[in-house]
Length: 185
Image (cartoon, rainbow, N blue to C red; front, top):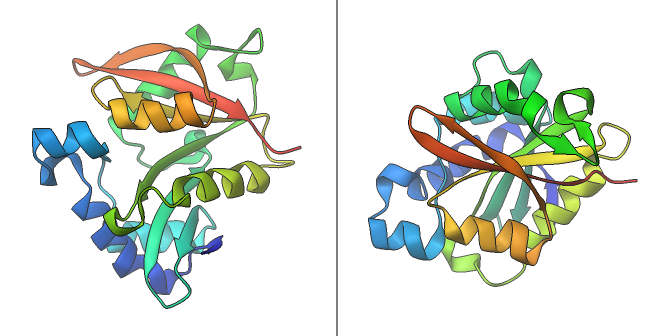
């Protein structure tokens, strides 16, 4: 498996991967078993994110994208999704190592999605490791949000990867857990 920054040419494959794992494309049973991603990430958006160096990918070395992970500065997003806006508003009530999150330089970790054919093969862990390494010198923490109903994402990020819960916030009646991990040294 190769871990690298996405290129603009990856955008159509990334959009297909994202769409196949979007909350609205999955049944309740699928969401419960595998987790889901949210937001609007079409090929044009993903192309722009790749051009800005905000997307990490895993590819199988034969041209197939196995997974993607976005790593961006939330405060710099031109039109952040509601859950990101909620996280930015909640920063003062969330603490990282005893300091309000708003006083800490942090990068938004996510969304992250792994193709069903590659799950259970360390792709998410490889993307996580690349994100931590890529954040060195740019931030103190990587911060993600997990919707309360997304137990698979919690199991991966908190239980397996050791991300620290920072607290919860609510946007439009939906509750999100903010979690974080130290940035690379």
